[in-house]
Every structure is written in C-alpha cells, then in structure tokens.
Length: 259
Length: 292
Image 1 (cartoon, rainbow over the protein chains, first blue to last red):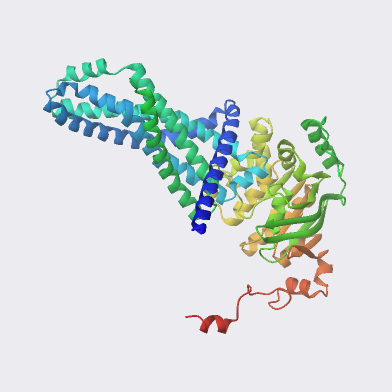
Image 2 (cartoon, rainbow over the protein chains, first blue to last red):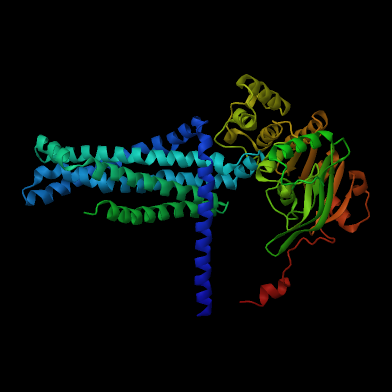
C-alpha cells in the first residue's frame, strides 16, 4: 500500500511538473510573438503548412458531416412535420458545435501531430542544439511562428468546415430529399443569431486552436529525442488535444448558451 | 576572471567587453580555461575536477574512449549544460554566469560543428549557411550571397548550394555545417566527432580543412574525437580524458612516446590494459548456467 501511494504521489508530481514546464514553454512562445511582426514571412510559411494543407481534410470531412446531418435531421424533423427547419438545424449544429469541435479534432490529428513530430525530430537531430549554438533561441524562433499560425488557422478552418457542411446538408435535404429550397435558407437566416451562434462558435474555435497548438508544440518540445519518444509524444498530442477539446467544449457551451 | 556582476554594468557594456577581450587575446594565450570542472548525470560522474586550457590559434584535441563526456564538454563550453561545480571561462568570462543575452552574444563568436551536422532540414544548403548571417546581421542580400558562396567555396560545396540536406552525404552535410559554423567568422570553433563514419577521402578532406581553416582564418579549434591517427595529425595539443579526469596531455609526439599504460593503450588501440573492454558483469559461466 505505501508503495502504491508513493507511485500515486510520484505520478501527481510528474503531472504537476509537466504542467509547469508547459506553462514555461507557453510564456517563452508568447514572448517571441512580438518579434514576428517584423518577420511576417515566418508566419505565412507556417500558415501554409498548418492551415492551407489542412483545408482538404477539413472540406471533405465538412461536406460528409453536413450530409449526415441533413439526412438524420430530415428523418427526425419530418416525423414532426418540421422538415422545412432542416436548414436551421444543420447550420446551428455546425456553427455552434460540430464546426469548432470536429475541426479541432481533425486539426489535432493532422496539423498537431505533424507539429509534434517535426519539433521532436528537430530535437532528436540536434537542430535545436544547433540553433542555440548559433545564438538563436529555438523556442522563440521555431515555436512562436507555429503557435501564431495555429491560432490563426483554426477559426478559418472551422468556418470552412461549417460553410461546406451547410452545403452538404443542402445537397441531401434539398436536392435529394425534396425539402423546399426557400424554406431551407430562410429558416436558417431567421434562426441563426450573429452573437449567440457565430461569435460563440468563433470564440470556441479560437480557444481550441490555442489549446491544440500549445499541446502539440509542448509535446514536441518535451519529447524524449528518440524515435520512440517522438512517437509517444505524437500520440499524446492527439489524445490530450481530443480530451481537452471535448472537455472545454462542454465548459464553453455551458457558459455561452445559458438562458 | 573578468568581473561581470556589477549591478551598474549594462548588457551592452558586457558585450563590448567580450568583443574587446576576444580581440586582445594573442596567439598562444589562453582563450578557454576550464578549472576544477565537476559534472554528473544522475549518479554517474562525467567530470571530476578536470582542468583544461585551450590556447588561441591552436588546434586542441579532446580524446578518450566513447562515453567519457567529450561531447558533454563541448556543451558545457557552449553554455548548453551547467556544471555542478568549477568554472569554464571563455576570454575570461565565466560562461555560466553570463546573462542569457550575453551568453547568446558570446555564442555568436563561437561556431560548433555537430556530429550529425544539425542542418535545418527545411532549408537548402545556401539558406542553411546564410541562416546565422540573416539572424545576426543586417547585411544586404547581395552581400549575404557573396559571403555564403565564399564559405561554401572554402568547403568545396559551392556547386551544391541548391541541394536539400536530405540530398547530401554524411561528409557533405558536415562540410556544409562547417561552412555554417564559420559564417560569422567566429573566434572559437568546436568540432564534435568530425571524422566519425567518414570514408577515407572525406576524412582526409575534413582533416586538411580543419587545419587549413584554423590557420588561414586565425581560428581556435577544439576537436573532440576518438580517431587517434587523424586527430594526432592535425592537433597542436591533445588532452586524453577518462573517468572524469585528464589522464594525459601534451603535443601528439609526447603522447605517442608516452610510457603511461593508459595512454599507450588508447594511442595504440590495445584491447587489454587499464581500460576494460567489457562492461562490469558477473562471471560468464555463472551467468550462463546458474539461472534457468
């Protein structure tokens, strides 16, 4: 029993240590952000890698999620004779919840894992040590630009996901199942509120972008510089990001959509 | 040691002092002074009161068996690791008492060639060599281009300027890394195992290059290696380290003529001697037949 207690205590200490290290890394990263204003090329390059290269997976996923929403929504709503409300249901589901959440999960899987692997391998191949010996702070030089790119990419990707999802819902609901075209769009226009839905969705995607990018960069920076260490760090990035996004989504939803 | 803790001394004053002091050290004078260095990794002692001196203008070699802390010593000199006790002074400045900003400034006067090359994999050869120039100078693009081409010409790789690091052989990658390490015309250049895994041609080229660059560019070179013949051919001074201590020092001839059994074993590559080939283990027969 004392041994188990000691192990439990050690696990707690390790977790606290990791949290502390991640906060220190975050502080160092944010310290490097102002200098990026004078070197926008660094951000543009990372925006391409983190954001633009994620557009395909976000678009394809968005259209399928929208189609499924259209299909399921039509079956449920038509039981109550409310199939015309399909547009509002699809849009509200996407803008409030599925857009930010699914985009964040996909972002963590595609861009987050790539960031962790890249940073971890840079450490394993002594590139970080090389930068330090060239008198260049690797945290500020390498991590800050990636952090800003992740933060900027997520809301845009979530917006693309939601927009494409609405089109997917339209395809299934209107073109395949025969919901009235005008009703689809007008119900959506009437039911979606700028502040309550769009702005809150934007805030969610910003928070998720912050958390997912932070986790990805920290895990890469904290990875044991071996192939196994980088592999484990990449897995941790996806798992921790997914859990953080789902947990935070509940908290944010509870705070945002109170009556 | 130069005092650097005065509260009224600004960072820029320290930087100016570093620049002046580096310029004032004459060939043959002490550039790096390592005193009573102690360093542990966990419970394993890497350095136990080690004392070394690196003189300006010389090629100094640090040699010893694998795992004796040769690379660790370079990281300690570069300020990437903190010693448990003792001091490392570069140009009279204790590396580990400098502020972050002043340490980074001192590093602009040092170049380091890593064992793996440590080239940035997202940049091509030209951009890798240009990297320190872009980070630390405000030179116009045309000047950066000329400087990079000169450095690449010196290592024989001007024609490879557009290649990616993944397209380079191990020897080429180290030569590019050497050009990058020299980009800012440092005073001190640190080489970590430059000959490991090189074919005879690359090894010969690297050997000549280290010596020629040291003399032509008035550098001070510190070469960490366990390749006896190659290192002895280019070094002015050799330190042999083992078990955390300096076991022998002198010029190559002195060490090659030494009677010390430890030095003889290392210089002649003998399997038997004070250094055991086998890691400590129980008796082989006992290990093979006692346990199921």
